Length: 333
Image 1: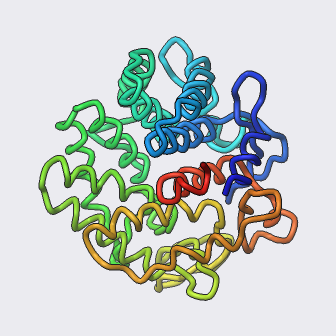
Image 2: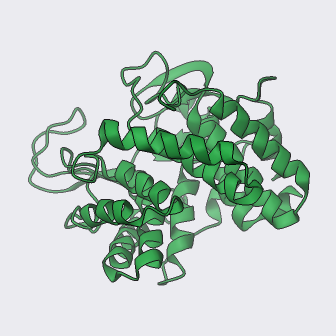
Image 3: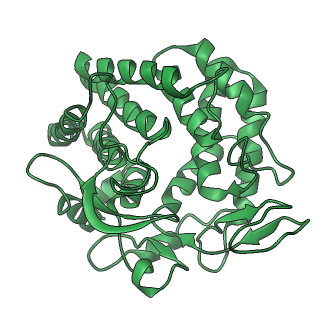
């Protein structure tokens, strides 16, 4: 697994930015650029390795990644490298999730090194994020609400976090998973997985079983979304009575099997690892490792086509780095 870190480090600039291309469901941009999730994933992975080894070289690497991140804030403590997809894309505004994810990484680092500058940026950022995007205690996209609730819990702002969680538990579909948003009934495997940590942490902070039951519903939905042959996860269920470019009107939920994410699927496995503390799931945690390329990275997808499937993106490979340094840290030492 050292080769994965070698590949990620090869994407690093002298300023400390981890660059990557954009290869998402909505957009493809082959030009490399910095992004909040790139920095956050590297910080989290280095923190994992420091916790395991107590070797200060990993702490130094985490701080270097964090220092670049906090150098990219504006007067409102907003991260200026939090693009929806890419700087030139149709969604230049990030929404709260791409602000909250780096906040989480800065707070995890702060809890180790006690450097107030990291806590201050996270706290000021989430304050403005709430002011800009939240209404009645939540945002209209559910996984984004969940990530903000995690930040609030780490800042001991329990009341606000619970308010967000209380909205989330009302958002389940008949499939068990959470709808994408109050405006979008689709149920995505990847975005549902992003809700799991927040729901579990809400349960652990409050003892309220509504949050645990909600997380378990998501887990059993994700369990059904894994393809047993490949170990990858199907993309989503299209909602009934919805027109899309992929299908015509229907009164049935339709499973869209492709594209299946490869590197991104490590985030789903992470959610399932957290859930395994509370229930048993039929999940294959090992098949995904077979997709690692010779250069150490994991490819983007299966199902986009040969050119895009073969590409690797820093934004999703940091999920592999986070997961593997948490559950298999010895492989990096």
